[in-house]
Image (tube, rainbow, N blue to C red; front, side, top):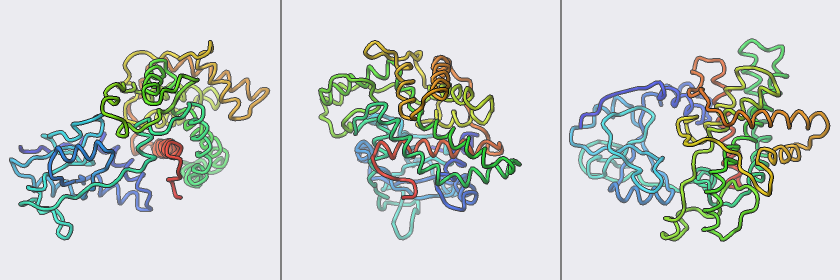
Length: 387
């Protein structure tokens, strides 16, 4: 195999996001380094590696400059790319193109790796190894491991967003100043902080889809015997803890995150006005699991129903109760949710984030991070961000 070098626009976006998520003061320097790097892991065999990955472990990797990696790869070497979208197997796929910001896996008998010398790409050597994946990350990604009603998860994520927003507020105020809004930076920071927290609150609104609820409750019944009661956000047991016979009976859940885009976008515009930056916040929330916004959706969204009440009507009651609203505030909230509930059935045309030179790219990155962290923290019951 002779790898070809290819860099796509999505690679550049991924590099910027990765640099932001690193959380160091040297974001730009890290960005420039990572844009031309790949992560390389060394394993004994594909079969052994996929077994470890199936147990929710993570590969330990070595960062290698893209140009070095390309120059060292010889025809005949076996190269796999890590693909975590696989459910049970085939986490490692053979590749013909090498791209930056991806993780590649070599065999120990060909990589010549040692902890002291690093990768020599010649002869046999050691494996880089594996490490446990944090429970919070497992629960969030697998949508299992800790049974949660929808409203409990929404409340938990909302409560955690207050602490995390306080961490990031100074950065939001500085951003407002840098784009020429210094005179209004306090009020803008207030509005943006609230909008991002709302994105956290509604990030899983797509789980109220009838198809998602039916499959999730069917899986929960098989796992725990629990009868349906309300709306579910997460099933009880981690899949690897179940018997093999039961695993085969569980169905894969359909995508839910993309539906957050039209809902949150409409809701925020109803409350705050027709501003483009609100679309950016909604898009970032809709990508809290993947980069798909509409492409992964199969079938239309249909609000589920329980005890004679449709989920969007139930949602109004839950949010007004959670936020302790009354009077005009409650009426405005109900109306905004009602309008957003209509739009969630419509497919979104927004399938790309703002570019790195766009003033709103900062909002995209920070919202995406905060939504993910709040989701992870509530799913795992622990603080992750700057503990």
